Image (cartoon, rainbow, N blue to C red; front, side, top):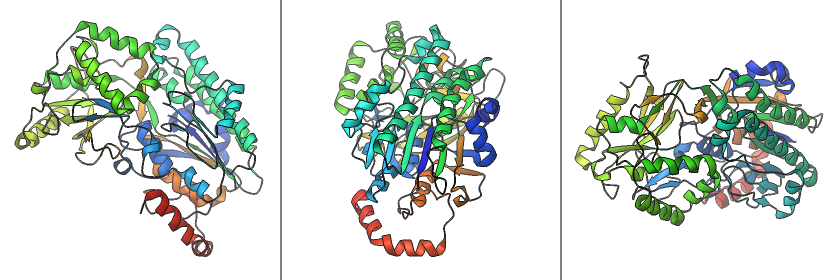
Length: 515
């Protein structure tokens, strides 16, 4: 059995359908295989969605609820990489049963760790990490790089050249994957992840010329799919296409912290100098390195102290941080990644400079929830779809120094939430790099000689991917996985399999999960 899992960050069914005229590989998937929606996680962010794809576990259990979290001293710190999760990734499980994997650019994996095969770390790695290191030679030969940096600044200056650079980087990734597969030889799993669709859709959707840019992104993936299908044996094997989330064009951006300030739940101190520093960082400095630094507790604490001492104060219009709040007068604040969801923390006794007594917390939370549902854009359309109480649900990836958020705010379709921008108003036009943003349904596709092994279904979820991969290699599904395999199971062969692998499965589960 050979399984090829093509990860496509941000791939979306409705976009693929719009572009099918120029995509031979996806056309073949739609005609001869399976092509349907894939439900992502809540929130629909790459960090938690990819972690769920790798482990088959929901975000509320694996703890990757965002890219960043907030500590008790208000430092915003990266939640780290998937390597730190207590749940093993599916290619590690395959390796324990003797199967070889070639994994290239899995997001949130750094550094590369020991595998049976080869592993190349993925975004947002600060640098390329490879296991075993001898395969680094192949990456150098093809000119491999993790990502294109400084995207927001580049898009402003020359969007066409930026797209071409992203496309070329994606082509190199596909070439590296095929070269590594050839070097490894008798591989069982081929798993590359392409991020080009996500990057281009963020600024392209919502613009008149979006198709010319987005089509270039999907064509890179399409060409790889056509090449990869030729690697499958005639008698068995499957190719999957999986995305972590979908995409949608954005009409307006909701500046949630500006709303909290306007409604009296938060108070900011201001400094015009701050905005210049923030814009320079976003436009020019490697954000991958910033995330790596933010994931290091000591370094993140040091940067936070320097920021509060020398760069304190929010701009009248521009980017700001949690350190810019007058904390003793701030009842609640928002933090997280710009997306259709974000999180709110009540500034209670869990924090050093709290402003809300325990007895008053419930009342503050109710007022915030009630106010959020009343927020509307200039056309009178409600922006907030739902507000979910998540206190104690997310535990900061098991890090005891993280404070769990209290509320998760979910926007309606066509809106994104920006917690890091302040303005005189709180419903504004989207930024340059957020004309398109995530949605809750990505894409799942399957094609290959073993297609008859797949169940009949219309939709599936990201947590179903890991158990599906294991089931194709006849490995029992671990008890910790939340998802279900998308393959048919023969009861007779399943009984024989359990008898042969029951002991080994228990040993592997005990070793990896510590149970």
